[in-house]
Image 1 (cartoon, rainbow, N blue to C red):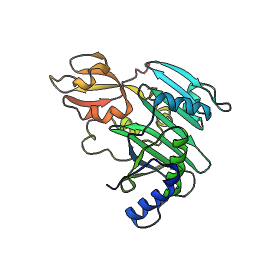
Image 2 (image 1 turned 45 degrees about the vertical axis):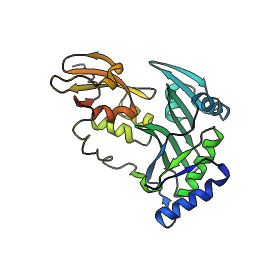
Image 3 (image 1 turned 45 degrees about the horizontal axis):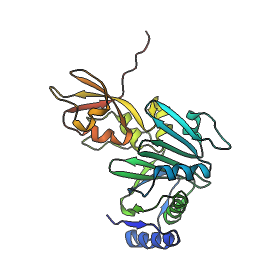
Image 4 (image 1 turned 135 degrees about the horizontal axis):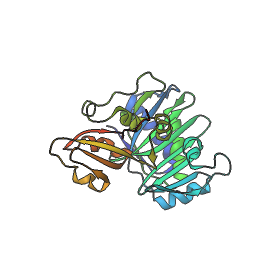
Length: 266
């Protein structure tokens, strides 16, 4: 995969244009009927610096620790309660331990930076057709204003997902029988918070409770033991990060990962 690292603000446009031509040989337009995800590796971002910079630019800044949440900054205009901020704040930063989820909405483009297994990904959601060079340049400049640098973009490896499709993206073959599709849908959705709200999934910051159906005589893998909240011989309840759902499902001894069953009154 062709990748190029962008750290200098003044050179961003030229570097992106060079990469775009080298990769696809022509301009690339992102349509408004889809959203697009790009792997960006590990960005150079200090959580405390990012939080302070986001507050100065009137982001809603929320910090989660377990079941509790602190509002570090509320925007001057817009929603005042936590749930509404997560769903509709034009600028949002959610902190959860070492993880963060940043979303910014402008006139022509909404973008988000969020964790994935092995790093971070950029989600671009055009409101009108936009040139990929212009879109990525705008994002890079905004992130640098927040103290985030070192974006490592691979233009030939981005993913396009149609909005409002009757069916969402198909699960990879190795996950199709091991991970509830609602959980996979959350992982790859355009916006985690909107998707979770629509599906009735209770997000705890960037974590959620899931149930693992264990294989016979199996144990929860050591990498996830600290996430276990309760366990029987066949089942275990865990609170895991959204970006760890796929690694959990792929782990030895795990038969199936699903949401908890919710009792329904007769």
